[in-house]
Image (cartoon, rainbow, N blue to C red; front, side):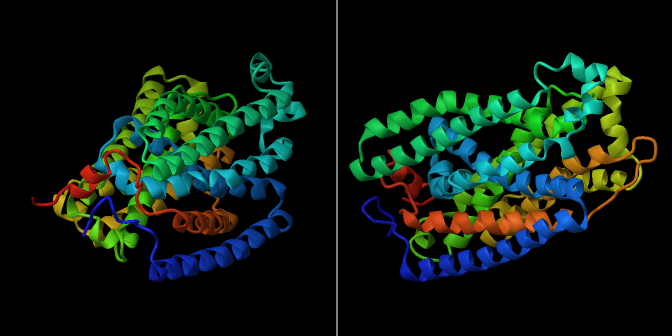
Length: 403
């Protein structure tokens, strides 16, 4: 039975499973984060911060991508978003903790970011950008980002609770109204944030496509996580009887669209840079196309685009819970390589490009992943697994069912 009168509360069996997952994630996260911290003394402060940025920015992007998709669903409606609203809300609430992960990067700014050092400040190009590239303004921008992201997360989750309690269209309208400017605020803040913490690792280089590349990666990762969690939830009541093959088919098509958008934005940046052929711009690609980094590029081309693109073209694979789960998990894993390339390749010597993979680059994403999943599994079961007050809940439950 799938009706809007059901409570869709987490069953005891599912609650035990989620609690066990939370405990495992907490243990793994603590162990690997402690090892990551030890890397500060073993591998040195700069390598620690570089690997910290890889792991942190990947999982922070999962939370921010969840927030962006949540607002997109409120604006567009549709059964696809109703089914994954709770996973997206749980993902967005990890920002309450993860937004403070920028503080070590701000404190260690002189160690990680060359533009902030005395040598960087003496550089003529950096001096021309001094109105933006200065440490006080970097802190101000962080404060703005935190207020915007946490404010949106708080209001969207608060009104979603009230929507469930009251079944009132008033809160549904508020959620939709906030999401319009909220999506715009997301794109502006994520663009400036990407510039602040990743693009300025190569301070002479710039790209007008960079913010969109980061945003598409975050959305793809968050969508893949939501799909993976939804499939796991569907093995237990109450989602067991609510999820249909049509739901998975629609979500698989959205994953396919995001895979193509990620590839399109990356190709757009390459095309603009290639056509200009300016020395200050092509250095970004020289570092990523030579030495061992060339193989990382092949992994991203084949593994991050070609393979998921071909797999998600199949209607059969999208409608099968096992295969769509495997594809979603695969995309999440390969996206770590993308973030690794965005960060670590900047530190390669452009004259003698070599791939240097530190053990911290492996440990850090696992540690932050454990922390993120622990927070995620703590938030997820605290509310009904479907939005009881959503105006289109009945439509979503009937989606793909014979009448």
